[in-house]
Length: 460
Image 1 (tube, rainbow, N blue to C red):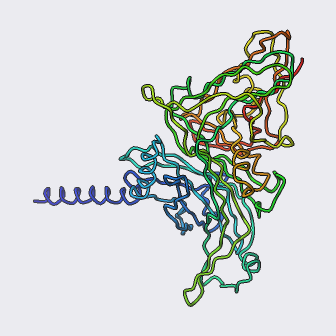
Image 2 (cartoon, rainbow, N blue to C red; image 1 turned 90 degrees about the vertical axis):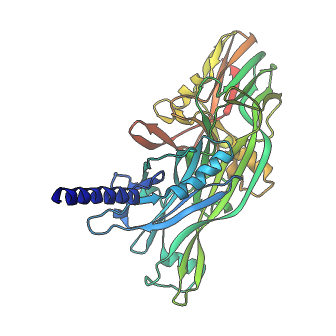
Image 3 (cartoon, rainbow, N blue to C red; image 1 turned 135 degrees about the vertical axis):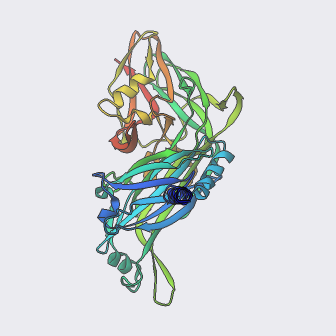
């Protein structure tokens, strides 16, 4: 009899344990652990507000969950627990658009003693398929990179009556304007030939990696940046997030550029998209009325929503690709480009695109970004005045599933008659904060990135 009661008791403990685990670790959901730059709980810096979001089928931002976190006694309280139902919303969207992974964005604010720290967003990816075990993600945020203001300053700026701490405020990003353009030619290899030789170039995208890959999402953030004309790296933070869509894609083409001041470029087709948002602080007064005031912080996203597909072979989707003689119609601002170290191109000897990456990314782990296609310049031209001129500096990278290979390879070649020329790849003068993925997790590094890949050919 005692043994029977003991068995029932132990069984009850097991059931309670399983139910408790399911609450703390949602089946098929995710646990997002928020840390500061030192690896400690972000809640140690103050009260944390967060928003979890993704992109919907049309590429617009869709909020999945909002909330706040606080440290309580001995418990750090720094974990966002996303249920499987919430995460499945993003996974369903990913499957509908034909993506192997779902993009999950995370916005974070830290409030302490009336001071508001707005942090650049971060992101992670989950497989589009259903999973039984929860995913655990650790995201690090550096308060030194935050846009800092006070609640009193925001209220004064908006001309609203201070509400005090009986009704603590919350924060949100709102989309003010967005545009997407379909079947756009996206230059991936641009050649400006200044020598008395023909120059051959080829760009192979996704052909050699044999892994799924996709375009990264780039975000630019700062105070009232919609009013700026020139790009100012001291006030505009540029950061690369996860990938908007992933699959087994392949594309590219080759081109021969005639001698003496001729241009040519290899392109792929896709849908390009920008999103412009403003940050608001919202407060509820004693009557329950909500007032939301702009803080001055703004941000822009630049991304490729999808590619134009011409067919498939096996599980690989073929991207519409081609080559055009002439200068691309989208101009990256020359004042924000500089030449990388030159590479000699002797007669008929190929110079590989990977060699240009090696020059630009020397001494860094930035190679996971690969080529930086000029999506900002394309969008700035197509938007017809809806984007500030500095937006043309923004680029978008391509990343492989394990972040260990270059998505775009190929080469350029001096076809003569000049016996030797010098190839220079163009890179950004400003740095971009990009994710670097290691076996132990993800870190961010600020690096100069390739533009195009845009190659100038000059006499040695």
